[in-house]
Length: 486
Length: 93
Image 1 (cartoon, chains in turn orange, blue):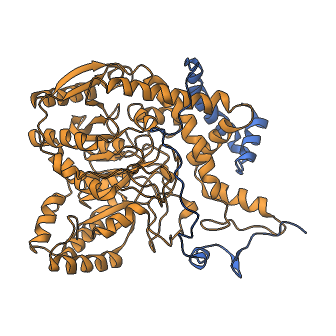
Image 2: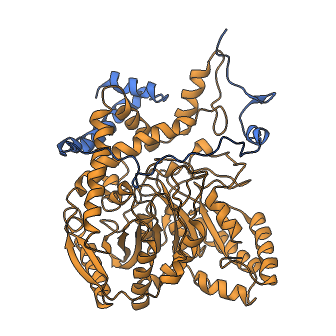
Image 3: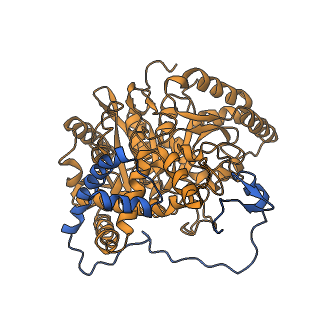
């Protein structure tokens, strides 16, 4: 029963076949027993979770409870949770207990979900392998010597090992889709502005977007319908009603046109990943969709543009960490002043990758370089977006690989930041364009999961989840699970 | 990228790099700058820089009080405070 989907649990809760308190205890025990081998949680919230579960049970007993009432989930440790440690994977926030909830956390709380705990992640979401976390790397449940992907590696591994039926995550350059692909689960990053960024610790504000991870598209639809909202507290939130993504899951794919970008099957792609993804697209064709080769000619600009824009925004966002108001404060020596307070607190509490990105950003924004780097990157970003705008005149969805390779060994790319950055070649363009993207399991390469990426036009999350669900009705890649988790 | 340049960037970013890590920092930065250098090959003449994917405009709201005073809650998690103020080392003698 550990591997039941959210919809099955919700049904059992509504019929009172199981209580939320029992379900919550069941998953807390699984975490306690199994997580030491994965390191997917930074914090578990035993007491608070049981209190939330009891409240949910009271609501369920009355009837008329929201769809997710009583369902336990986990939040990525980037979302502020009132009264619960929120570290963002950093020594800087290793003692940070926020006095408020992120809007997303609030949306889930209002729906009656239970927070099991906070999941591990790359420090400040900067990484593609979860190895930059101050709390140690997450291990991939499919192969514990391999990375779980990043930055939402904790959420992905926890869902893959059935330590939680679902989890929140964030995606700035692929941080939902790539770990979802590497851990063999379903993850969706909606359109920029669809999920509130308020209370979600900022990395690169024009790219950051919250989303969800689950074991199938049907569950992801339930979670996203709850998480998405317009939020006046986030200045880039989009004022537009949220769809019930569960309603369109069963629409036929007959007549749907899938664009397959030539650029996503070229250099850098593992040949077995290519074959696996092509077979998945052929499967979708069998369900009535047509495919069409398309071109996204500015794809090669995505990684370089991203590694200007993301560090530039990160250097501005992370300037708030100064040892004064919250977070880590260095012990000063006699006679040291406020400058030493800033420099020592930041130097002692940020990890290497975070420092590297802050410095790249500071350089790109510094006098004399702004036009050559930041302004040029923002123009490249427009070109990348225009590629998609043109493509979506002819196709409904775009499909290709999520990540160029399956999960790699922990430590394999440790000393080469650029090699690590190239793991995101297929996901970054979507963030730059602000488009929704998702990853679903579509097979195995070297006995490790491989993901199919689905990219939609703005606000096409319903269509994407629909295609994913239809694929999952016809195949069983999503129901495979790692050994030793039963 | 040389030593003086990386030290200047670190200073701007309020970070200190240990002497024995300078070479590694230079190598890391140089690799990344080489990667982003590919941008210069893009023809961006007449392209308008993109700030928001949906070209959304900044929303405005009425100038009304919308939040409660939560100073005490925020200061409860601060490293050092006194009488409602955040304390830092002495700035002016």
